[in-house]
Amino acid sequence: MSEQQQDRPDLSRRRKPQAAPDERVDPVDYRQSEPAPQAASVAAQPPAATASAAPRRGRPRREATVPFSTRLAPDVLELIDAASAAEDGATIRSVVEAAIREKYQTK
Image: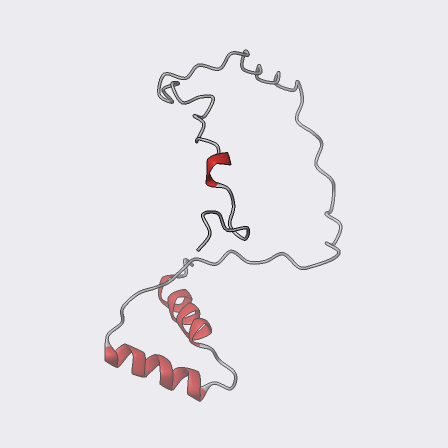
């Protein structure tokens, strides 16, 4: 076998790792060298509200969803499955939302 193989890189040319420029800066004691921007002055009068809002164009606003990962009792799961099967096209989400609205909706 030859001492140097042409298909492998020359290891003597590799550079040593270099330290980051802020290696010796403690992030807790860090102070910004430039001054912080000043707060904007408060407006004298609030902007006037429009009489009626124009209808939105484009894509409809997405509703906010919250992850609902929870454990339910087997009998509750059976009730949810039965309710979603009884209503045409009902999803588990719609059944749970309807039950929560029915129970806790303020009047």
